[in-house]
Amino acid sequence: MSECGQIQAWIHECMKIGYYGTYVTKADDTIMDRADMIFYASCIPQQARNSIPSPGFNPEHFISNDKNEILKLIKHYKGSRFKSFVQYDEALKFVLEENCDIVSNDSSNHISLQNSPSLQKVSGLQTVAEETPPFPSLDARELNVFKRAIVNKQLEAVKQFVYNNPRYLISNYFDSPTIIFQGARYNAVHLAIRNKSPEILNFILDTINSVDFVQKMNPNFSEELLIEKRDHLLDLYLNSPDKINYDTPLHMACKFGDLECITILVGYIPVLDTKKLNKQNLLPYQVVQETSLREKVQELVNSSVFITVSKSVENLDKSINKACQVGKKMLESTLKNTPEKNVQISAFVGPMTLERSRKIYEIFKSPKRCTPEQRRIRLQDQERGLERVFCELSKELDLQYCEYWPFLGSFVDFFNEKDLKKLNDHLRSVHDELFIIESLSKLNIKSNENDESEDEFLDAIEKSDDNDDDDDIYYTPSTSPKFEYQTIKIDFYINGRQKEKIDDDVYNVVRLALEKQFVNRSSDSLMNVKLQYPFLVHWFTNVGNSEIFL
Image (cartoon, rainbow, N blue to C red; front, side):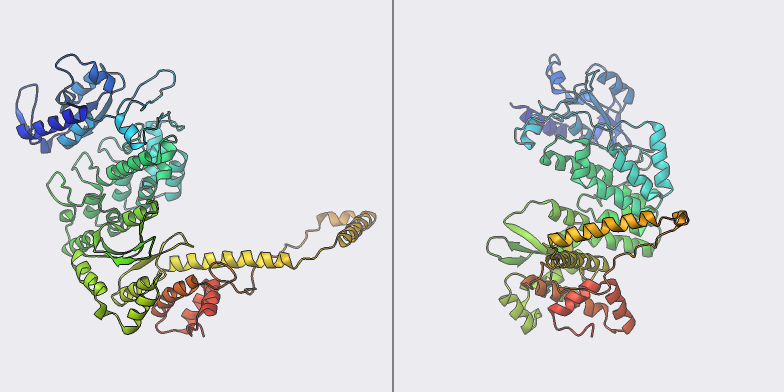
């Protein structure tokens, strides 16, 4: 039987004889409830497992509720790893890991994963040598300074710590969060929530969710392995309970009634486990004391359903997909990091509740719900027609709509001021580039004019030397005025000087956003838009015949 088959048989046997429900201590053979215990487990290198005499390697011998027993055990196996777990099955999986071959070397502390079958499978049989990361380990004093920065809500300081040394977030074993407060086993996410700092919480989770950040600790790993490590770290940060009440980050955010932190956390569903129980067997929303706040929390947790529009890259066939329950952060991250395939997501609507998503889906799928004009657009415009109708219906139903635009490289919602600014910045960069090119093309400098200018320049220097006066030493020249565009010099479009179909497509979405934003069309609000988005307004006026800014 293969090693994988032996492991599967072992787990099956454990489930048959009840290992997952009770635990028999070696001291007095008493049966204890696993819900009230912490399991200490050791993962030893494969070579050490093979060297164990008959009857051979037994995973049960490497799990115990006695920490000292495991610590004594791992001293006999060089390169062993040690962890604590709340669930027995998690401890068992850790013991049975195949890629925990850590070879310690006194001179270089080199880490080798070359003999790991699972690693070779992931990296496509490519040999991967994991070297010691180029970042120093952290002592208690440094972690204490980092803790104070989180407690005092010093976001910039926290960013500086993390950017300079990823070990503030990733432990020495590269696969678990750094414990900052040892007593309660708090990591950076726990501390950010306990101190009601959604900005720091958002930064930490965004950073952990970045493959580039994980790569700083593992520069020689393949992309597949980096993604695997990223997902593992994110799961631990989102779902690891503390040591006191077994409260997960979501339990803590609910206990403190911090809706901002809760909103950030639920953005990572389904990685975030919303059904996890704490020591009192309570779900996260059940720890909320106030009834009205509890209802808001339940709505936030349940409102993580999206409806998407997918298209075929080959023939532009499109379809509206049934609702999927996933946090917005995870949806955007997945869409951003997924390589191009035959089918891509071009737009999505949400978040919403599962119950409402069923009704919305039926509305979107029903041709009767569309006006004759919308049906015409959907049939005639194969490239963006469905998305345009999708957008109009979403705004009628007061739902958030995001669409992917290649020239911006992201999903954007033009009903959001931040994304309007992103469009304005893009148009400004196009204008600046065209203006510079046109200005340079008008320059006609002759070589003899250069020579004459040079002679005049030298004569001026000689005259200035003859008339030099010491009183002029303290003369302060006037400050050169900063270059600013008083007016927009040239016309421009999204991709340059020529108007294209994408200009009309973006115009239709922006028009909906501006019309909804300025229903009353007060002169003050229109003037603010002209001042805030001058390049967008200029482009918008050139593309369409809208009277919004007239």
